[in-house]
Amino acid sequence: MNVFPGLFAILANCLCVLGKVSFVKDQSMDMPFPPVIVKSDSGIPEGHLRPLGWQKRSDGKVTEEAKMLEPKQLHEKYLKLKKPVKFPKALQDAPVLKSWAKDENLKEKYGKLNVTVVVKKERLTKGGRIMKFSKFLLDYMYEDWYMSNTVPSEMLEELPLPSCLRCGSLRDSLYETELWMSSGGTASLLHSHPDHNLHCVLFGRKDFILIESKYRKHFDFKENYPNAGAGHSPLDMDMINVFKHTNIGKTPWRWSTLRQGDCILVPAGYLHQVRSFGRGISYTILFAPTPQFEDQNCKKAKQPTKLSEVDFVWTYSNGQRQLTNKKLDAGSTRALLLNLMKDDDKLYLSQFVHFYDAVMLPIKDRLANNKMFGEKAFDILDQPNPKGYLTREEVTKLTPKQLGALADIFNQVHVRKLHDEL
Image (cartoon, rainbow, N blue to C red):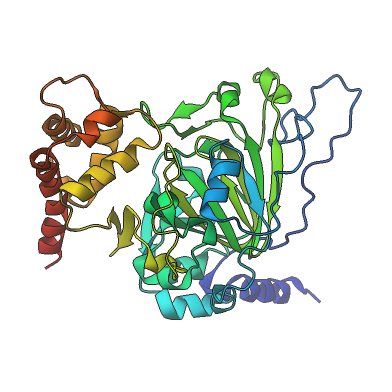
């Protein structure tokens, strides 16, 4: 008796659940980390053609705090020193850990939203794809996808604002909050951000490798654009060639593993690689480095507890990233420029043009040359002595007329976008 036709029929039924023709990705979360390195007598350097972390034993865990710190404590102990720190179980009582536990709940509440989805093999060449969240939820358990998205405004109400960011200059420098979602094992590039990054895990497991910025050259690090203060390594982090990149085996690194409710602070400029396991959902809060900590609004009786209660520079609405403030004036535009400077003494033309391009993206088809228009907009601020940058003192002395002219340009984006949608 030939059993193969019946066997193939059973397999076909198994593989075609929900219309898929592949297996659900491995959801296990018990992989050992950090790697156990055993010396070999083969003559081949440690970790050759192995993932990052196998080339040298780590220098140990990232520092952990028993509870979330207050804003001033965080600034003094870690931000000022550019030192990472983990906060175990910081969000263990957050209601979102129940309300987002099942994809069905997410689909029912937010399925109609547009989100940005990255295909791993295309992430360096094509960026993300825009699709309905319901489509992503249907396929992400099977496809080589992950979601990387500014948190849609509709979701902000459900995500907690950690207490370390609830007041003072840290609250006033909130730049953006991003939502990450993946399935199975995924690995990021080795990269850094120009802003401080508080990363909190809601579901799944994430392993972090953290490396000081001064070792960037060991990884052929590429800046995103001139004076960006951030970028990535083009190296394959799953297969390090230690014969070609000999310094990687000498580079010190620390590690941290995050599970449900854990948060980690990665300082601005700090190199990090992240590996995710299982059904992973996490969110990051990016906030700009500031020259010093100011404690304004820290003495108020009631402080915000949700992301929906604070202002970020960027928001995500109708499938597009855009400035949160739709009615900029001279004062708020000056604050925007100071935020863009981070803790540096200069605001470079390259930084401004990159920011300008991002602001104009919703109406980019109307602009023949974004860079040219960005440079013209910078001229509004720097007409007397065009030199490619503005100092912090010069930004603070910009006139209401100059700042108002720039505010009018940015505000027009919302007006034109609304007109296009109508």
